[in-house]
Image (cartoon, rainbow, N blue to C red; front, top):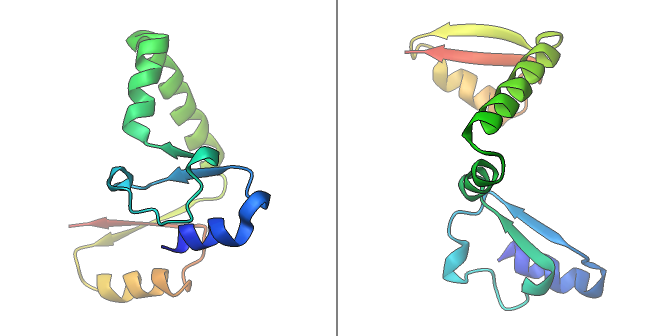
Length: 112
Protein backbone atom coordinates (compact mmCIF):
# COMPACT_ATOMS: atom_id res chain seq x y z
CA UNK A 1 0.00 0.00 0.00
CA UNK A 2 2.98 2.33 -0.54
CA UNK A 3 1.14 4.13 -3.32
CA UNK A 4 -1.85 4.81 -1.06
CA UNK A 5 0.49 6.19 1.63
CA UNK A 6 2.17 8.41 -0.95
CA UNK A 7 -1.20 9.78 -2.06
CA UNK A 8 -2.18 10.47 1.54
CA UNK A 9 1.13 12.15 2.29
CA UNK A 10 0.99 14.35 -0.82
CA UNK A 11 -2.72 15.15 -0.53
CA UNK A 12 -3.61 18.15 -2.69
CA UNK A 13 0.02 18.42 -3.85
CA UNK A 14 -0.44 15.18 -5.81
CA UNK A 15 -1.60 16.59 -9.14
CA UNK A 16 -1.43 13.46 -11.28
CA UNK A 17 -0.26 9.88 -10.88
CA UNK A 18 0.42 7.69 -13.90
CA UNK A 19 0.54 4.05 -12.86
CA UNK A 20 2.68 2.01 -15.23
CA UNK A 21 3.29 -1.68 -14.87
CA UNK A 22 0.44 -2.54 -12.51
CA UNK A 23 -1.01 -5.92 -13.36
CA UNK A 24 -3.80 -6.36 -10.79
CA UNK A 25 -5.18 -2.85 -10.41
CA UNK A 26 -8.73 -3.99 -11.20
CA UNK A 27 -9.07 -5.69 -7.82
CA UNK A 28 -9.15 -2.34 -6.03
CA UNK A 29 -6.04 -3.04 -3.97
CA UNK A 30 -4.75 0.51 -4.20
CA UNK A 31 -5.63 1.39 -0.62
CA UNK A 32 -8.07 3.69 1.09
CA UNK A 33 -6.08 6.88 0.46
CA UNK A 34 -5.45 6.29 -3.24
CA UNK A 35 -6.74 9.33 -5.18
CA UNK A 36 -8.47 7.71 -8.16
CA UNK A 37 -9.68 11.05 -9.62
CA UNK A 38 -6.10 12.19 -10.29
CA UNK A 39 -4.68 8.83 -11.33
CA UNK A 40 -4.55 6.95 -14.56
CA UNK A 41 -3.59 3.37 -15.29
CA UNK A 42 -1.37 2.73 -18.29
CA UNK A 43 -1.55 -0.81 -19.66
CA UNK A 44 0.62 -1.31 -22.75
CA UNK A 45 -1.52 -3.97 -24.51
CA UNK A 46 -4.57 -1.70 -24.31
CA UNK A 47 -2.54 1.24 -25.60
CA UNK A 48 -1.26 -0.85 -28.51
CA UNK A 49 -4.80 -1.89 -29.42
CA UNK A 50 -5.90 1.77 -29.37
CA UNK A 51 -2.98 2.87 -31.56
CA UNK A 52 -3.69 0.04 -34.03
CA UNK A 53 -7.29 1.20 -34.28
CA UNK A 54 -6.33 4.90 -34.60
CA UNK A 55 -3.52 4.43 -37.14
CA UNK A 56 -4.33 1.18 -38.88
CA UNK A 57 -1.97 -1.80 -38.98
CA UNK A 58 0.25 -0.53 -41.82
CA UNK A 59 0.97 2.91 -40.32
CA UNK A 60 1.35 1.39 -36.84
CA UNK A 61 3.96 -1.04 -38.21
CA UNK A 62 5.81 1.78 -40.02
CA UNK A 63 5.92 3.95 -36.90
CA UNK A 64 6.95 1.04 -34.67
CA UNK A 65 9.73 0.01 -37.06
CA UNK A 66 11.02 3.58 -37.38
CA UNK A 67 11.06 3.99 -33.60
CA UNK A 68 12.92 0.72 -33.06
CA UNK A 69 15.51 1.53 -35.75
CA UNK A 70 16.08 4.99 -34.26
CA UNK A 71 16.43 3.54 -30.76
CA UNK A 72 18.93 0.92 -31.94
CA UNK A 73 21.05 3.59 -33.68
CA UNK A 74 21.07 5.84 -30.58
CA UNK A 75 21.93 2.99 -28.22
CA UNK A 76 24.68 1.59 -30.43
CA UNK A 77 26.90 4.53 -29.48
CA UNK A 78 26.94 3.71 -25.76
CA UNK A 79 25.57 0.20 -25.13
CA UNK A 80 28.29 -2.46 -24.92
CA UNK A 81 26.88 -5.94 -25.47
CA UNK A 82 28.44 -8.92 -23.73
CA UNK A 83 27.30 -12.43 -24.52
CA UNK A 84 27.30 -14.96 -21.68
CA UNK A 85 27.11 -18.60 -22.72
CA UNK A 86 25.11 -20.99 -20.58
CA UNK A 87 24.16 -20.69 -16.97
CA UNK A 88 27.78 -20.72 -15.73
CA UNK A 89 28.24 -17.61 -13.65
CA UNK A 90 24.65 -16.48 -14.21
CA UNK A 91 23.90 -16.33 -10.48
CA UNK A 92 26.91 -14.11 -9.87
CA UNK A 93 26.07 -11.87 -12.83
CA UNK A 94 22.46 -11.57 -11.68
CA UNK A 95 23.51 -10.63 -8.13
CA UNK A 96 25.96 -8.07 -9.52
CA UNK A 97 23.15 -6.48 -11.55
CA UNK A 98 20.83 -6.41 -8.49
CA UNK A 99 23.56 -4.85 -6.35
CA UNK A 100 24.32 -2.14 -8.91
CA UNK A 101 27.81 -3.48 -9.62
CA UNK A 102 27.29 -3.71 -13.39
CA UNK A 103 28.01 -0.63 -15.46
CA UNK A 104 24.76 0.78 -16.94
CA UNK A 105 26.44 0.65 -20.35
CA UNK A 106 26.64 -3.15 -20.15
CA UNK A 107 24.03 -5.13 -22.05
CA UNK A 108 24.27 -8.71 -20.88
CA UNK A 109 22.91 -11.34 -23.26
CA UNK A 110 22.57 -14.79 -21.72
CA UNK A 111 22.42 -17.58 -24.26
CA UNK A 112 21.23 -20.93 -22.92
